[in-house]
Length: 362
Image 1 (cartoon, helix red, strand yellow):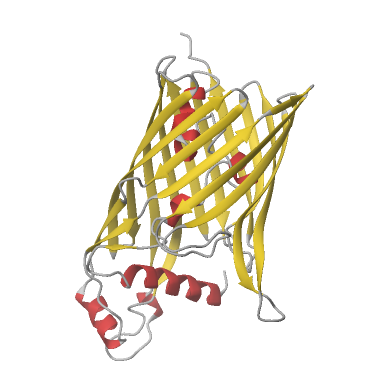
Image 2 (cartoon, rainbow, N blue to C red):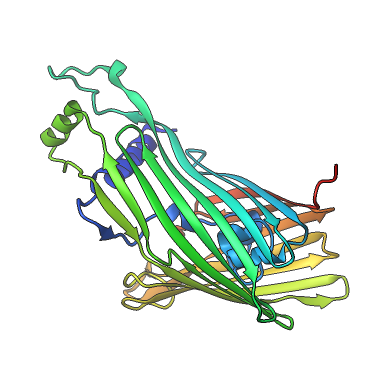
């Protein structure tokens, strides 16, 4: 990793850490590591999956989909790396059918950057540079999701919820605990599937606490940086709506799905912009052969950017592709997806594993 990359990373992380307000505030991009997405299948379809997901990853995308598990038990695993391996993104989930009407799931997400150089004490009180004073720390975001889903008395309608706990830690400087709830539903009408997820339905609260030694405080004062204080960070609700349908043509299946992500925290750079409501559409498609081989693609993350020539704005979007292989309950998926900034075009290779299991017999 180059020196410039380290400096940029350190600057970004310290800005995130030390420019927090002392009072509770609604931050537009709070807990964004939970918006990256999980599972190569969904990422290959540009995250358009809330209406049709029905494996262990439903605990993240739409907990109501857990009622449609193909077998009694399902597990999912994913590992991904961003920025040339600087950031590690890991995901694990398991789900089980409690009975014919209800299911339970658990998901764990970790996004972390390790071995970040801490240069606060690089220069001592006498103005001497001592490289032995350089230490390292990690910036880690963790999320634990407990999911429950149940079929209702209305034919085709399932509901679900997530109770999530968030733990964020940046070295020994700061940590935050967060709590929130997601509400969800799926409805099947003949061959059509509809999905709705209200993430952070009650708003998710992150309570930040800081632990700075006197030397660090002195450095901050000498360099004109603000001394952070304990406070609350709020993640406002967002509503995701989806519709999809699977078409069967002999041994082939075609499954298109369209999702709309609606935010309520002011104008965003999305395809449909408003204040306070903005809407971001995502479209994905999966083509399968004999329920074994799958090819996927999708578009999303539409943004308005200034044209290179002239004063007008152009609409850009993020394309994604993926493939999958499923055999005897074991599915291996691959996706080529951007981290979300078309100007940088940092595409990552994402692999994930999903296993559907019957109840183990003694």
